Every structure is written in C-alpha cells, then in structure tokens.
Amino acid sequence: MNKKYITILLSAFLGLFLMSGLWYFNFRDQGELSAQEVAQKAVNYLNDNLLPEDLSASLISAVEKTDIVEIKFDISGQEYDSYVTKSGNLFFVEGIDLNEGLVNVGDDVQQEVTKSEKPDVHFFVMSHCPGGLQSQKVFLPVYELLGEKVDMEINFINYVMHDKEEIDENLRQYCIQEEQTDKYSEYLSCFIEDGNSESCLASSGIDEGKMNNCIAVTNEEYDVYSQYDDKSTWLSGRYPKFDVESDLNVQFGVSASPTLVINGAVIALAQKDCPVGKECVVIPSIKRTPESFKEVICQAFIERPEECSQTLSDEGFTAGFGLEKSSESNNASCQ
Image (cartoon, rainbow, N blue to C red; front, side):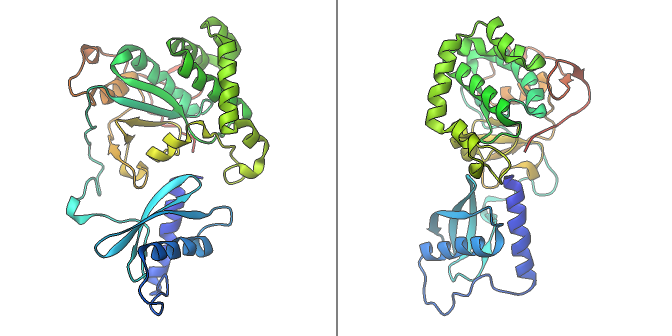
C-alpha cells in the first residue's frame, strides 16, 4: 500500500469532519485522560471510521507535549506521526513546528545534502521494475567510479509487483552483495541488459553454491517463499511481501522503486514526493543520468575526493531491460 495514498486518504477524511463542525472524539465527559489513553482512542478511531477493512493501525508510542499528545502508529509496516489535543477532542494527521521555520512550502527549491566523511548511500529498487532497472543503469557507473570512497548498495522494496521472478532475483542480488560483493557490479551490468540471470551468474564468476546457501538461509529467516505462497499475507491482497530489508524501508519511509537515500535522507524531486515524518532533501534538478547522480552523491562529502572531478555521461537510459540511451527525462517508477 502506497504510504502517500494512506496519508492523503486520512487527511481527506479528517478534513471533511472539520468542515462539518464535528468533533473527532467525544472525551469531554470522561475526565482527564493519560497520553496513552488519548493516543489509543485516536488509533481506535482510525480503525473504526477511516481505514478500509484490509488496513489497520496499531499504536507504537505516545508522548505528551506542551499542548498536545504526539502519537506514532503503524499501518502496513509504515510508521506515521500524528497529533491529538490533550482533551482528546481534535486529531491532526500532520503538524508543522512553527518555531523551526518553514522549508520548501510552495516552490520546491534546491536543498543541501547532509555531508559526511564517507557518504552512506542506499538505492531502493524492485529488480524487475522498469524504473528501477533504468536507475540501476545510472547507478553502476557511479558505483564503479567512487568505489570504497562511499558506502553504497542496492536495497530492495519490501514488497514485489512482478511476481515470483522478482523475488528470485531480489534474493540473488541481495546474496551476491552480501557475500560476493566484488562480483556484484559485473553481474548487475550483465543482468540489466536482458535479464538472463543464469548466463550472468556464469559470466561474472559467481559461486552459485555459496549464493544458493545464502538464499536458503535468508528465505528461512524472513519466510520469503512461504509468504508468497500464502496470499493472505500479501499487501492489499495484491503484492507479495519481501521482508528481507523491511527494516530499512520503514526507517526511511520508502515505498517506491527507485528511491535514493543519502546520509539518512530521501532524495526527492519535489516536496510532495517526501515520505511523511522522515528526513528528506528536495533536489528538483536531479536527473536520471550518471553525471547527475554522481554530483548529488559528491555533494555529500565533507571533502570531495578527486574522483568527483571526473565527468560521467549526462545521457540517460530507457526504462526496463536494455542499454538503449535516451535524452528524454523519464522518471518511471513502481509503487
């Protein structure tokens, strides 16, 4: 389930209640409530009145602030921060701290990436998503250029949209990165051409016995194939779960392939694309080209290494398999 969709749905319903002049809750005759009680009432209200039958919210935490209770709840593996007045009368899906100042409200202006000695880069994809494949073609030249100067890896969205073959490939790539990292670039360079994993495993010299053992252990730990076989576990009854890196998905609020995260912040083209309640940097100028991708990562260095002075191609690729170049801006995604 798309996190932005859920947030929009909640906002729309709550907005209608406000316009009608109705209280969300009727706690006024119940005496003083604790922060935990107020928060649980809010979550109960979401489940009873706003969410579809196939979704449910569960309370994670409740923190009492000056005038409100800040609550954190979970829906389908995604965390949300919302607010309830201490009286329990009003529920706000989102909030803005006016003392912190407003950033990027209205026009989407260029923001700065947080800098570090060795940038930490996560690139979230579905292995058979056309937009994910397009972005991996852009990722590879930068991955090969910056090498050990950056902690950079491909991660996988915690559900799949391209059936079992995507689960199989996610597991292959996950295990190659985990145990045969030095061969991953060569394997991925081959795979993005036509998706023939069998020939790519052979040509890149992958130890298949070692890889298959890793896949078996990973499958047992995360119940990957048993969840695929049990459709009752699928998201919205449509998408098999892939929980191998679900903790990272939740940490950064990732819900779309591709998603780029640098030093803990999601990189977005516009504020509307930022995950709710997560750190996000808006860079409207970023393009799906090796040079643009390189420059964004190089901004994250405290001291830019000499590799950042090398110019890569500023031409992009078509979505899906194949290495055909494209000069058109194409931001295909799966979510």
